[in-house]
Length: 607
Image 1: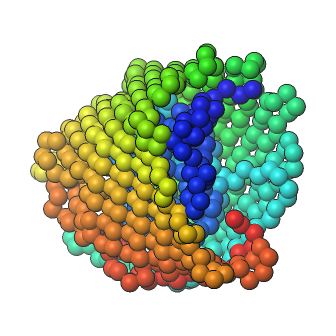
Image 2: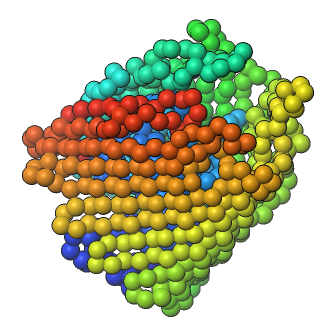
Image 3: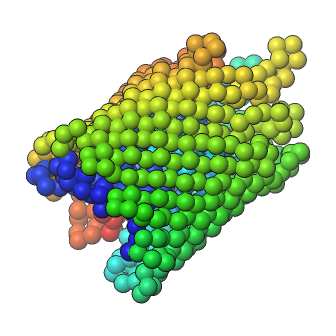
């Protein structure tokens, strides 16, 4: 028997009044593993968790991660010119490099940039996404200051089932995908391919100055993606699994180098077994690659290839009724190959972690500690402490405090003519309190938090020489409130996400760049006759594009519509209208966003 907190997590959900027991209300919360590295229902988790399922992806018809995630509570996505262009995530107002991203448990991201190329992850290949807001360095080590996002590819299992979709839309956008899942009993498999192409639009408006950019052309994008996943469960209960995600293609944009050829890949294998009914062991190995060859007007410019190798051992021990102890160790090795002459091209990190989860009557508690030994920065200790209490059968209070850190990237340390090898890791402390509840009309969750980031790394330029380099100069304080409300009444499903943020540089009192202080998103879906119809409304306040708060990027609102109609068993026609009111707006200064866009597709299978 595999130990976990799932049984008493389900019991707590029942205590609060499971939504599946009420008419016209969404089913009970799904099981998540990212928040604690163990199985627990989202409702029982002490962390702020949002789960996006395959059904959600099909329903929204999103073609990019920015379309899928923007406006979700605590999340802000900024794009630099449409499909395939640089896309950043700010989670709870932290830096884009303060979010740890996993694909089926494998750490993703560039070791030189320190962030993930969200633009190359296609929703067509994804089964579900778990978003955990708040520090998680005590379980995962460096990077998880703002939180963790784990992406799961399609898993397979059950009878053989095929699916496919093909569509065309504005800006010459074409999207074709197909796959099959199955395996029957103990064995499961999934194979999926996707090809996304667009002619694009002019990604960037002209910029002034002697080094300005003026390229009035359409900037296209091509991405061919493959996922493979297979697993087997033995009669003894032991499991093995292997998985691969690979995306490669070409992107055009407006800059000094204006085209790149990329590869983004994550490969992993996992074995899990239970030596006894109270002890479960998990072994996992993985490798991710982020590769880019850059060109300027057709001439080769540079190469940046990074590789991250990981190993993990985790032991889950049931030490008493409703008490789970997790002990583990992680190994990470980062390597860089580039045409640029980095002084250091490899470093490793070993981390040991422990976590205790317990339930005492109406109360839940979590304590986790981690010790990392980094080849460059020595030892670092982080921790999390959380408490939850069911005040009433339908209302639960939560309080948490956690620390986290972020090791400087290879670019920040060693990029020729820019890097600073004397940089220190960024460190953070986060406190939050929240209430979560259920009612006859649905569920709700509200959180307030404060994150202080010390030794914040910022780029400092000499006013005389105009040379710039990163320095540990700033301290940031981020205060926020985030709310999620979900209902399902009379066959209509709605979800409201609200985020209020005050992200400040403590020294200057300026707002941190590219963070909107207010964000609201409303999703509404239902049926009209035989058609499924839906609408998303997104509104964001203005933001500043620079640390000095001199470049103001205006706020905006946009409306997206969607519809799906079955034309035969397992066949449907789908249509999506983005930016219905043709609003001109930017999320990054000088970089254009798409106007009114229409995409129509024919789909077979699916949810």
